[in-house]
Amino acid sequence: MGFDLESISEATSGAVGALVSTTILYPLDTCKSKYQAEVRAHHQQKYRNISDVLWEAISTRQVLSLYQGLGTKNLQSFISQFIYFYGYSFFKRLYLEKSGSKTIGTKANLLIAAAAGACTVVITQPLDTASSRMQTSEFGKSKGLLKTLSEGTWSEAFDGLGISLLLTSNPSIQYTVFDQLKQRLLKARLKRQRGLESSPEALSAFSAFVLGAVSKCAATFLTYPAIRCKVTIQAAESEEKNGPTQSKDQKSISGAVYAIWKREGLLGFYKGIAAQILKTVLSSALHLMIKEKISKTTWILMLALRRYLSHTYQIKGSLMTIII
Image (cartoon, rainbow, N blue to C red):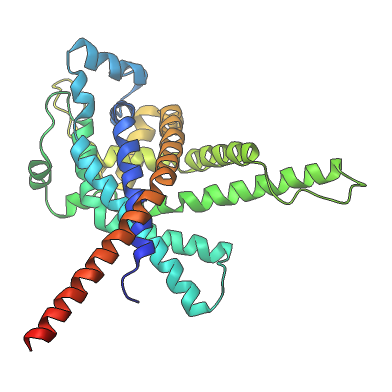
């Protein structure tokens, strides 16, 4: 299929957008992850809410530790977003070429997105595990990427892979909720406009934004127990003497579910959901905004690079012809 310039440009702009949004929201992400990773009975909890995590960093003069693991997280975010956007764009182009159609349907679009997401998860899972362990370690005691990965076995680097693959369904849930809300809203508008020749065929920008945010919150709410279990499985070992140690059973999905249920009850599966929704919505908004802003610049740079390489290749070809 040759050099896919469009896919490369899309992947690069998406990866840069993820890099910037991850860096901006990283302190919130660290507080959220440490709060989610704590699995204790209510009377033994170290953090009553997410603000306690922030206060611990401030009171112990470890504010910069809110950025522990940022390099690994950015590396994982950049690589994963690049692979996802390139894979999605590539699979989409391949589907259109093979099917011969000019547009792509909803079901095919969701399948392509799920396939791109699954490929991304499998490739970047060790980085995701390492960044989670670095984030959830004690403030000031985070280790480097290589040391974090070398302390465990190769299979432990893929902790939470099953849940990560399950969470690739999040966009499908979001789109389904969005589509249902959209249809209900358009039907309601149509009823109010009886007798008029025109009917609303599309949502306004504000309505689409609101429904997008609502659908994202709904998808996060439905998949949050899996998110909580994933953080618990990937969390660093507690170094507190009076704190509960993390057993090997807790590293499995069933073990994580049992530990949360036993120590925190049903509501424990939704511990920290407010911070998760806030971070998810802000991250998505920042990511897409930054991606759209730099996509044109990326496209221009890619065209310039291709012309430069093409021109260099032509010069080398001419020189070889003269020599021969």
